[in-house]
Picture 1 (cartoon, helix red, strand yellow):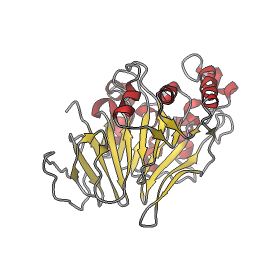
Picture 2 (cartoon, rainbow, N blue to C red):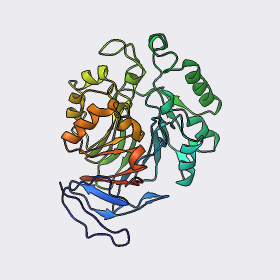
Picture 3 (cartoon, rainbow, N blue to C red):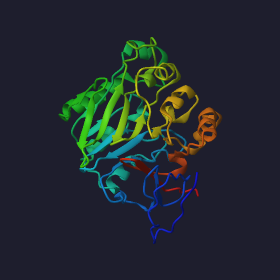
Picture 4 (tube, one colour):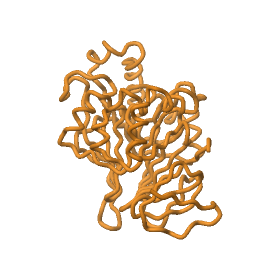
Length: 336
C-alpha cells in the first residue's frame, strides 16, 4: 500500500492507482482506480471530484465515552437520507442537531432506524422538532414479548419506541417496515447505472433463521451503492445472526463496511468480515471503546488484514465519496 500526501492549498496531480492512507488530515483519497484530491471538510462536506458522486458522512456523535450512530447519505441528484439518528448519551444535548444545522441539512427524503436501541434513534424527534423535513421513516419494531425478557432495563424500551411511533403519527410522517430486497432509494446515473440504497434482509427477533435473537439482531441490513462501488451497513449485527449470514445466500461483499455493534466483541464473527471483504471500515465508537479490550478482536482483525479503520471518536467526522470504480475517504483527524 502507498499513501499520497498533499498540502491543502495545492491539489496533487490526479493518480490512477490503488491508494490507501490512515487518517491523513484534510485529504481525500480515492481508492482503487480513483482520483486523489486534496480537500477539506467544509460545511458542504467534501468537495467532490468531477463527475457524479454519492457521499456518506459518518457523523462524530461520540465525543465522550458513549457510542452512537448517525450517518448522512447524499446522492448525486441532491437527495439526502440518514441511517440512524443517534447521539452519545454523554454528548451535549443537541450535538447532532447542531451538526446538521451547520451543514445545511433541511430535508431528509428518508431516515432508516436500523434497530430500536436509543443510541440509534434518540435524536430523531429533536431533528423533526427543529424543522428538518423528513419524508418517511423505515423501522423494524421487534416482537416485544421476546425482546423485553432479556433487555430490561438497559436495552429495548417499548414505551419509548411507541412514543416515537406516536410522534411520527401526530406529525403525519409515514413510517413503514421495509421488505427483504426492497430498494429504498434509486437515483439513475448518467452512465446508465444507479446510486441506490437497498435492503438486504431484516428479522423481527422471533421469526429468524437462528431462533430468538436480541434487538441488535433485528437490525435492517443495508447496501449503499454507486454503480459498482458499495458500502454495507449491518446496524449492530451480533454474533448469532452474523454467524448465519456469513454462510448465507446473501451477497454481502462491499468496498466499505460500517462496523457492526460499534466494533465490539459481541459483533458478527470474523467469518462475516471475510464475506464482506472490505477495503476500509468505518467505526462509530468513542476512542476509549475502540481501544478497550471489548474491541480487541475487531481491531486485530482489521489490522492483520491491512484494512484501515476510521473511528469517529478518534478521526472525527469521516466522509466517504463513492464513484463508479472507486471511493475516497476523508477525515478530520483531530488527534493527529
